[in-house]
Image (cartoon, rainbow, N blue to C red; front, side, top):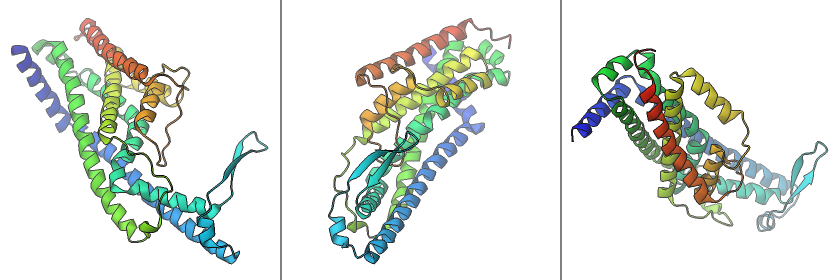
Length: 322
């Protein structure tokens, strides 16, 4: 009971520090900004697709082509080789193609699809970097601000590390929950706005995307947040500094290509394609195939080992020579 009270006390101190140092606010505003930017991009793309559809109708009329017949004719897309060893797509029915693009854009903006597309955009494009950096910072700020000696004298260091990890998971969960709620509200407002400019009922997808399990998508997104924040936490403890592990992760995540199926990014992509459909503008890269359960187990094992190794390394590190 005494240890639990000590951990809770350390957790309370950690949460207060992150609150008064504006870490929570900065993290929240960063994630919210990226998510709202995605919503406005979707609205802009929908307007552009609709304007293009209207121009195509005008061109078809000028050429004397029957509009209804064109809309009822399926799209045939052929891929052909270009001179520069590339591939080009030849669309046989531009009008129907533009119609489908408008219908898909409107479908992606529907309130019931907002959470899914927000999570697709955030989870796989921004969360790995944001939460890795967040984990690195939480692991190293005591060293940076010379408070590590004071804390090491007052409390068991493993309890302090545990309180830091718990604070990361709690804050991540709360921020994502609030961001999704705000996105749903703003997305609904934007959809109602664009519905006044575009006759939504006239645009129907020939085949609707499969219904997704939103709860499972949220859980996967949280798992990815926890995973990369723990990875950052481990790197911060290992290097006892902020800059070096941040640069290492930047190089790994954005420069080094995926070379094996057991690459962390590849396994995350495996889980992503299993849970999300990626019908929006963001498309996650196609992974090197492996069983989904193996990818999940491997990431969980890596998560557990990273935590254990972090504690072992921290236990051996001196808190008084920094």
